[in-house]
Length: 338
Figure 1: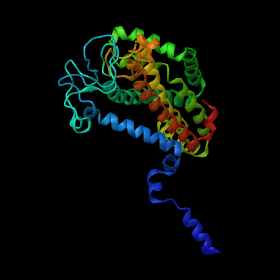
Figure 2 (figure 1 turned 180 degrees about the horizontal axis):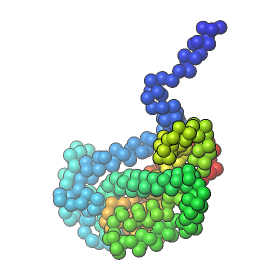
Figure 3 (figure 1 turned 120 degrees about the vertical axis):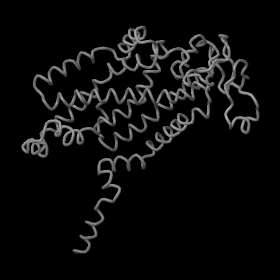
Figure 4 (figure 1 turned 90 degrees about the horizontal axis):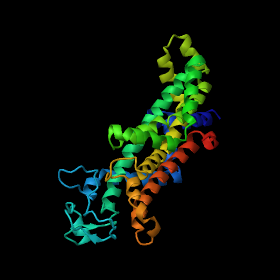
């Protein structure tokens, strides 16, 4: 009997990888790699990551040109069908082109949009834009929200009241409309680039993180190990960073993983409405905006919307699948919270 108990105890001992990563992170990683939905999302994200890293090989930019600027094949307002030959200043051919395509000249693989912007180039380099925009906005929003929510929950009292009232004021603005207005105000001052719409989305996106982390910290701050750290004289900064945040951060990570796709979608919406990056920047939302003059004739020019639209939908879907899996692994109570 004793030997069986010893075997049972040994079987419950954490492995080397679990000890290295920690039990919570190990459980999260194991769940992601065994959940079919998360595996699908990770596979899609892996594909997008490969495209982003290989963009200079898949769609070589013109020499001495901004690689994020979509090359044009003239200025005609009429789109060209996929497979049409380049006529004006075609980009350099990649090494794989002739062996695979059996042609010695470049063609528009996905056609051109109104204004002769090459859709294939925009979709490929737009993948880099999506990762860049998603990571910068999500990290900025999460950091700002976590900081304000942590300070609010830990100190309480007047500090909590002021921060939460400011949060309520910002939450009273319709998110996309407020971001659209602020981006339109900033663009003439800062110039059309990724910065104005990113700032606008950050300014009106942090409130959910502040509320979420605040509620989780309120449930953690009264636990015994936190009170013991206070008795031992630990500083507020050490208590927050070492004892409270590591035990309250996981639900926020779930929301952040799902918001990656949401912010890319919101940025694309701003680009579609004309307050995103400068015209010709490799951005999926702007590519779709080039189809505005052909909305009633998409039967003929379907490719202008379908290719960048599919990239946008699949990118958002991939992050949502990973976020859903993280939610189920870390905190099933989040199902009805957001």
